[in-house]
Amino acid sequence: MQQHHLIAALAGIVVLTAPHAVPAAEPLECPVLAKLGPAASGKLAADLVPDPRALNDVDGLTRAVGLFREHGFSNADTVNYLTAIFCPVIRDDRSLSAAAKSEKVASFSSATSDIVYRQGR
Image 1 (tube, helix red, strand yellow):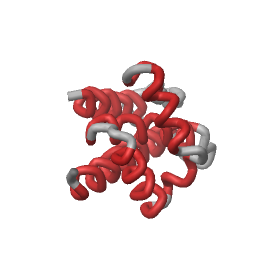
Image 2 (image 1 turned 90 degrees about the vertical axis):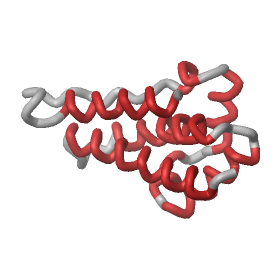
Image 3 (image 1 turned 180 degrees about the vertical axis):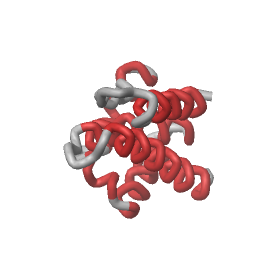
Image 4 (image 1 turned 60 degrees about the vertical axis):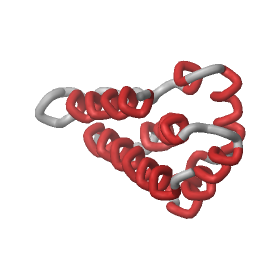
């Protein structure tokens, strides 16, 4: 259920930051770890990914999914937390337009979902 809320929010970001929808580039808003669940879960999630840039690589993302699974995160929480952790990396990339940032977050979330749900439990 939480995954659907995050994906819906990300879809809204894509629509809101599309070049034809917003004349000025709006900053990408990233999910806040503390708002995704208990504070301890957000802290643990952040501790499991000391360098969020490593999630840009499929091997790094796959390893992170395994770590989250080992620590008892549900599939939906894994997708949500990893997206929230990686989002600031994209937000801070000055080489990307606002629309490209939104597309990249949505693509990352989709790729993360594919890995999480393909691996199963």
